[in-house]
Amino acid sequence: MVKETLADAEQRMQRTVEIFQKELAGMRAGRAHPALLDKVQVDYYGTPTPLAHLAQIAVPEPRLMLVQPYDKSIVNQVEKAIQKADLGVGIQVDGAVVRLTIPPLTEDRRRELVRQVKRRLEDEKVAVRNIRRDAHEAIKTAEKEKALSEDESRRVQEQLQKLTDRYIRMLDEIGAAKEKELMQP
Image (tube, rainbow, N blue to C red; front, side, top):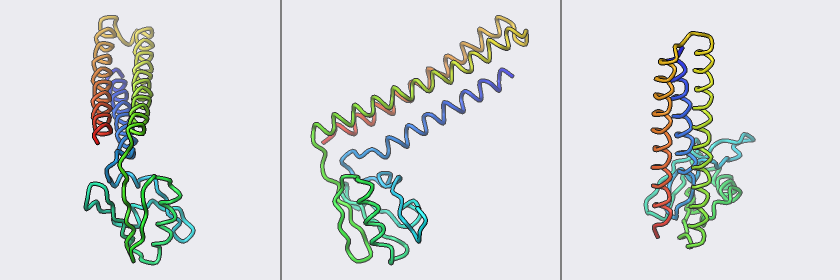
């Protein structure tokens, strides 16, 4: 029961870190990155479909992305979907290819993005702490039901705290790396 509680807590914390990484990957840092287009949905014959399923996305230069739909007839729908996503990029259709130019970020925009990263980081830390609280309650319940001795409970709580510290540290490192990336011109 104790191992299951710890394993579940670790799995949930890992998912929290993965979600944070995905969200940060979608943040525009003044450089072209295919993850910028992750949330773009194209109306493909009446069905909203992720752009990544309908097109090849290439990054030939740091500030340029090429989107080449597999079906050439949907180039206009791809262009409209990217415009609708309001990514703040320049869009140019060149035959069967959509070129996206990423403008450099202003200093104010960089600071705003860093504030967003810090806000998201704090939210994710709270989520990890909530996971710890849930596991802690499960351990306390097991101790009250005499399924766990006081010493075992204390030992498991220490393991839980070390696990929590490790994931908080991971989140801090990911957040710091994104802040550094955002502040580079």
